[in-house]
Image (cartoon, rainbow, N blue to C red; front, side, top):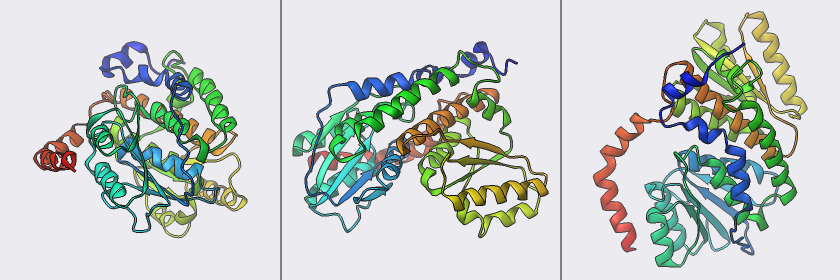
Length: 351
C-alpha cells in the first residue's frame, strides 16, 4: 500500500530536507572518516557539553553515551557554566551556526575559568573567538539546517573526542546499523514497510512520548523534531515517573496519542512498567504505538532511534501539508533579539 508519493513529498518539502535525511548514514560515515585531529586532554574528571537546539541534542547524546563511565557529565542549555567547572573540566561547546548567544557565553566563561575547552561550529563568531584566544576548534559543514546536520557534527565530534569517548568498534557498529536503517526509511520506500512512515501515519492529536531514562536523549530529540518539523504540540514523560503521577491523566478522555519508546534490553523493572502500561491502556481501550530500539551499544540505539523518529516527523509534516523546513516562530524570537544580539556579539569578539 502506498502511503505517500514523491510528488506530494516534493510539493510540500520545498527545500528538500528529506534529501538530506536520505543520506544521513552517508553523512555520518563521511564525517567520521574525514581528517579530524583528535584531542586527548589529560586529567579530566568533568565534561560539560554546551549547545542549544540541534546542537544541544548532541550534548544529550554524549551524556547518555558516557553515563557508564567514571567521568561526570553536564549538559548546559543556557548561559550559565556550572560552578564546579575548573581546570580539570573539559567544556565542549557546539553551535552549528557559530553565533548562538548562549553557547558563546559558555565558551567565554570556560576560557576565563581556565577550563580545557574545545569548540565545534561551521564558522561564525565561535571560530573568530577561538582563533583570537587560541582555543581548540573543529569546523564542520552545515547542510540544510542545524537539526539536519546532526550526523555530521555528532560523528565529527566522536572522532575529535575519540580518546575520551566510546571505543571505535562501537562507533563503527552504529554506522553499520545506520546504513541498514537508511535503506528502510528513505524516500524511495514510501509504503507500509517503511517504519518511519508507518509511525507518521499512526500519529494524530497530541503525541505523548514515554521513554526510559537511558533513552532520554532520543525522546527529547523526537519531541524537538515534532515541534520544528511537524509544528505540533508534544508531551514527554519518563516511564518510571509517569507511574507516580502522569498516568492519572488517562482517567479522563483526551486527544492524546501515547508513543512508547522502548529499549530491547531495558532494565527488568522498566519492562514491568511497560507491561503494566499496556495492560492499563487495554482496560481503557487507549490505542498506543510502540517503537523499539535496535540491539547494540547505547550509541547505536540512540542514533538509530533519532534517525527513525526524525524522519517520522518529516513524513508527518508532509502528510499534514506542511513544509518541515521553515521555523517562523523561532525567526520571530530571533528578530526581536537581533539588536541585543548584535551588541553582545560585538562585545564578545572584542574579548
